[in-house]
Length: 203
Length: 81
Image (cartoon, rainbow over the protein chains, first blue to last red):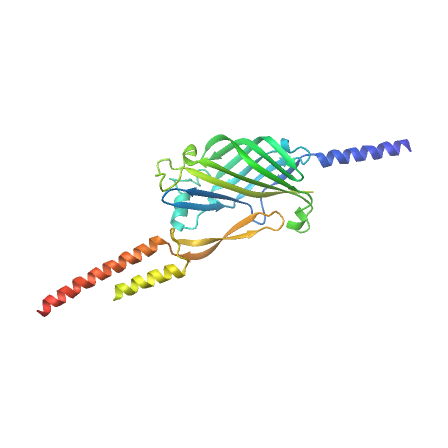
């Protein structure tokens, strides 16, 4: 009897450990909803576009959100603006050089100023942003929403959790060598980025 | 008369197709909200939306046509004399 009770306690403890363990969320979205929007608002011209080639993985522990780490990758060739000539230039050698630099990455090393309320965590992610081969240490605001057991609602016949990450921040294109000689009254130096992505952790 | 028609067609088409004050577009973003995550997804649908560049070209073309017609009329008047 004593042995059975101990075994049961042990199983519960193991279960607790398993539930509290960090989960790895995959951001390759089969529905293609994940996106990064970029806006450049220059004096003479405003440019807006988006990218949906998102992948990467983030390790998130709902019991300890401050330990969140991970890497998000945006395929540079998926950057899109509605004007075909502008799109060609954007991918070309003067601007993003997508064949030479096929990926834009942000690797988060730690979270600071973490505040959690229910399933929502807001924090500042400290990490390295790499665009066109140029890397820069950055601290960006992030909002993480943990959706427990919601994967099945998105992908039928699958069980698991979802993690939604939202972030809005500004970078300077000159810092990353994106056509630094381009006139700033036509193409703004400041690029506003908005990231809206969801990752899945199947069970 | 033809120049006026070209200019009118250009302006009417530009107005009818959205009066886009930016560059000409061949795709437009279509946004839809994912019910589970609340993320606003963006898809691009193929659609031609003329911009001020195309409108400007058409109006310049109309102006050149108008100028050419005046030249042609002047030459004809001189020949008649």
